[in-house]
Image (tube, rainbow, N blue to C red; front, top):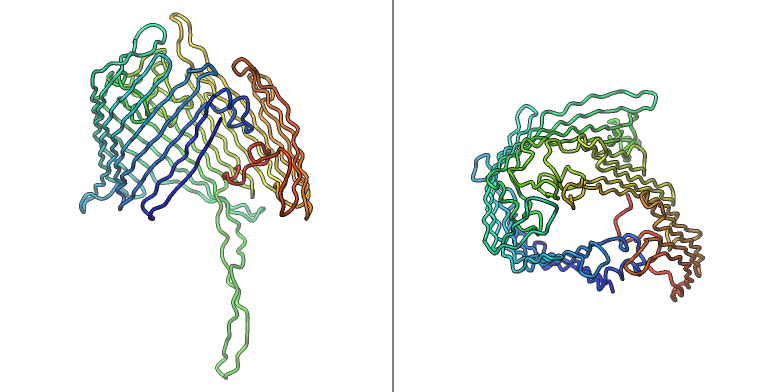
Length: 509
C-alpha cells in the first residue's frame, strides 16, 4: 500500500501549518504495482509537517519529518531518519543599529534518530547555534559581501569510524560531542561588462553581458572531529574549508529595433476658434528586451584537499563544500580542483526552452554529469526530451581493490497533442530508455477522441524494470475508458496511470 496526503492551513498571513506525508507498506509493492513510472523507480519515502510563524523576519518553526531510503528489495536494507521534533528559530538578515553591518541567526534544537543495517543511532539530541554578521559594500560598480560567523553544535551521542581498510560501519559512541567553528567568507562581484551589437538584417539589437563573480570561504576549528559527527541532515556535514572559486555568467539579450504601438486614446484638439477636431493619438513604445540565452561556468579550488583532516580516503565523504558544485556530492579521495560546471539556458524562440547542465572532472578526464532538458510547444502540441548521465566513484569495498565507478545514463522523450478533456483528437506518448541496461524501461501511449456528448480513450503501457525481489516486472497493459458527458465514465484509465501529464503539476518545461 502506498498512500500520500498533502495539506496546508493558513491561520493568518504570517502563520501556517503545511505537510506532505507518505506511507509505503513495502518497497517491492511500489516496484511491482505502482502505475506511475517516476514513482515506481523512486527509492525514497518522505513525510514532513511544518508549523511556521513569521514575525518581522523572525521565524520560529516546528518540524516533524521522517525520511526513508531503500538500498535494495531485501527487507530491512534501508535507511530511516527521524526528526521528531526539530525546533528552529531563524532571523533573516537585518541592519545592526544604524551602521553598515547586518546580522542574522540560524538555530535549531532537535530530537533525532537514524537506523540502517548494523547501525542504530537513537535518542540523539542536537543543539545548533549559528549567528553571522555581514557588511555589503558597493562602490564604482563593484560589490563586496564580507561575512563572518560563529557556529556551535552540541550532540549527546557521537560515532567512531574505522579509518583503515575497506569500508566498515562506524560504531556508536555514547560520548557527547561539541563542534565549534569560526567562519569567514567574501563574495566579490566586479562591474558587469556589456556591449551592444546591431543586427539590421533581422531588425534586432543584441546585448552581450558578462558578469564575473569571485568568492573565498574559510572554516576552521572542526578538524578531524567532523568524522565523529552522526549524519542526519546538512547541519551535520560541516567541516574545515579553505576554498576559492569563480563563476562567469554570460547573458545575451535580444530586442527588436522596430518600435510598436503601445496604446491609443481619443483626444480633442482646439484651434482657439472654438472648433474641435476628434483625432486619434497613437503612443509609440520601444520593444522590450528578451533574455535570449544564459551561460554560466563555475569552478572551486580546495586549498586544503583534506578538509582539515575530515576526509577518509576510500569512503564517501559528504561535506557542505561539495553539495553545490560537485555532480556527485561526495569525495572518495583528496582533491584540489572540483569538476568545472557549465549551465546553459536557451530561450531564443517563443515557447522553446533548453536547459543543459554538465560537470567535467578534469582529474578523471571525463564527464561527471551531463543533463539536458528541452521542451517546445506549438499550437496544441508539446514536444520534449530529457537526458541524464552520471559517473561517480563508489566506496572501496575491499582492501587493495580499486573502487568501481557508478554509472547511469537514461533518456526520456515525451509528446502531447491537446489534453485528455479537449474536443476532438488528443494524444500523449512518453518513454524511458536505459543506455546501460540497453532496454526500454517504460513506454506509454494514450489516444483520446472527445465528442460533445461523450469520449473514448485507448491506452498502452509497458514496464520492463528487471528483477524485483523474487519476481520481475515485465508487463504490458492495454487500457480503455468511455466517458459520458455529465454522467461519468467506465474503464480502467485513471489519473495515476494516465500517460498525459498531471495538470496539477508545474509545466513540463
